[in-house]
Image 1 (cartoon, rainbow over the protein chains, first blue to last red):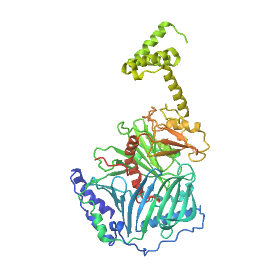
Image 2: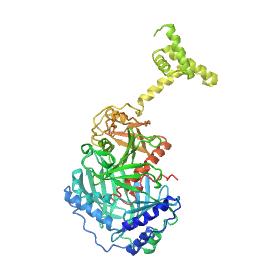
Image 3: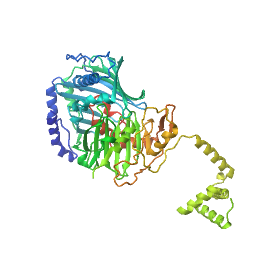
Image 4: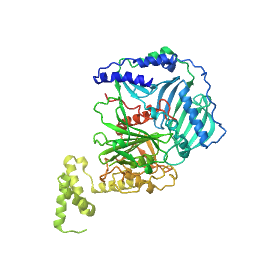
Length: 373
Length: 217
């Protein structure tokens, strides 16, 4: 499915170069609606009816265990992952950093192997994201631009895919806490307490009935840096075929831009990471070469190298590019909620490290980077 | 502080040139030293400024004592102000990350101020930003293959410390903060998109923090 979609969009790419391309619903997208039958998206965002899913979710791991054993943590991760892959839901998602609140409307549907997700930003510049399996479209209605980007399947739920989840308990301590009520649902509350200073604590609320993630707080020493979760959510929404068909045509008439991401390796690009200097527990998820532009209009944009690292729970990106005085003016640390961004010029290179980790950890990534001779 | 008349007249000439904006670099350095060391030079400097001010407007005439009172008050105020991060020369130091959260409260102000000042760069935030504990500037980052120092452009930001030992840094002007957000937005978007389906990533979470940014078109 994903391959068919990619192929269809690739055909459109040369046309895009003429800057006159009118986006039509690709065959693959129509195929999605046939595949998913009654799968719904848009209408459910507003008026979709709700019913319980017939598929019964697995029971949660024993909540009586104040578990610190690897088995417990693995059980919860699998439960949360399965719920994300199985649930149909519609809700309002709120992200709060203490100084800003950003909301979006979220619809997420799974049927068989097809996943469809729509996110509409409710604050700031209007934009919508539509994701079908491993293809993502960002629509900018005021600009009538649609940016199409393939998601990296290797980056999908890295811990379980790579099998490295068994190492997570070495870096996070699991505490199962008292259940709470979140966004209208009874929720299991978990604390993943960082065992060192290279990462933050996370408090996680998962729907008790289905395991769906309802809220995640990032904390440092008991202080909440950032909170993301649903203010309300309907789980088990019934799909509507007409609505999804309308959704697939929502980008009609938009200028379509396809963002290219080239997969590579850090070593192949002349760099290496000194493993001994990295924060403990972080493994590489991959390396890509990409242009950076919000609208994906990559023509003439300088390419940057992005090296991605994960400890199974959170991830860090290290961007490497040539220093350009007109673009790279502010060296130092920027903090927005839990997201820390460290920028630094090193000779003729400009490094940007981003992650929901303490600045010292970002600094370690920068120091571990070494030019191969 | 006595000095030969020739020296004195020379330093007056240089001060005068400095007041007119005509002093060369070395002359300016000598003028600064004279101003610092010689009360007469300070009086002369004030006189030159006063002459210029009165030429521009009578309202600008002021007693020399007013300057001194202002300076004393300014110094007293500066002594109570939080530290202003400023450019520092790079120094070689251990590539050892300090514990960030633990014992933050116990850390002395002097201990974190050093590394933070060296970290300098700028600390921009949307609103107020909390930075816990020290981190080190990349003095000996191994990318520096030719060993040249890499001190970049540095902007000042005002920091203070709260009672938890956390460094609070106020944003600069809204325009600078917006510029910083604009500069970082594509990086944040690429970062979030690259691991969308992490174990605790939620739909919509990749839109956080970048909603202020508009596409350049």
